[in-house]
Image 1: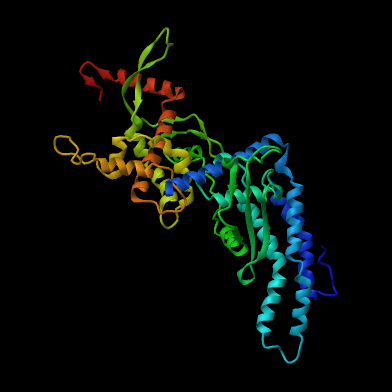
Image 2 (image 1 turned 135 degrees about the horizontal axis):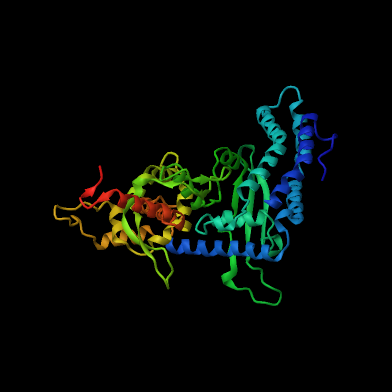
Length: 437
């Protein structure tokens, strides 16, 4: 439909609808591009199927993400439907407001007319914000344990094949509270879609538990506060490089100016070098064993300690931490290392490292400690508050992940000659009577 109808729309309303007509196609183009354990298991399985369905589509349809005319036409048509009665209603209100004396519900009518005037811009923002919130570009960063409805809505709004009206999915625009606008997603279908003549596989059914509603004002507030419906999991390589760059473990190391990615080079800080160890400078068939300085893990941990604490706080701090990313980092990045009970890590996490004068631990590990570890290291959902045990295990495993990676870098062949040279220097400085002074 066209919103140009001077016969029914006063000049102020007409201007708003003109703007909508000019901006709506641009906005929808963006969309085209763009028991608890058991419940979590079902969520994971459904999300896996939703994401796999999109991946399958991308593998079979060329250049799908560049432009989806079906999705654009669908959205434009739904917007047209939403505004279908607005011109006539605006004319009715204008007529009522012009009466003398003023009608008793003058204020209510004035507010309704204001909402009509604002509706085109509100719709434009709703389309832009929903496209931004539900635009999944990199499926490898999406944790399957998170909001199942949001992931399904993303596939529908983006017009992914298999998630259209013909397969049982859809959405519509309806008035929300206080002049806002809601997008209502609903439906169910089989992913991948059932082929003609085949019986549907019940395991392939994905659905909304109930209609999934996104409100224009809520989305606007989320965009303003940099909050996300769908959590993207941070790249740990970026976290590691940031931590390493902020320390003096490697003096003069090179980092990419644009991304901050560690590029190698530099000189090892002498404070992280430990006792001599043997290293093979030859081959397996013809070994050439020489002493090199070891890398002192305790010193490396100390050097990284402040940066690791800052990064953990960015996830876990109750005032500013990103709770969603903490869960996605745990599920997708660091939980694998906690799959089996490790007494040393458990003692560090639960504060059980104190020893007596003879060097024995004062507190023995009990079945409860093992159960606490097992409970804390399960996949994390996105609903319940994190327990103290979960936070404690996260802190320990996050530190281990960072330190393990940095240790691998420091022990890499590029620094082997430096470690050998350090041993050679020490040997030259030592006489049979002891070190030179």
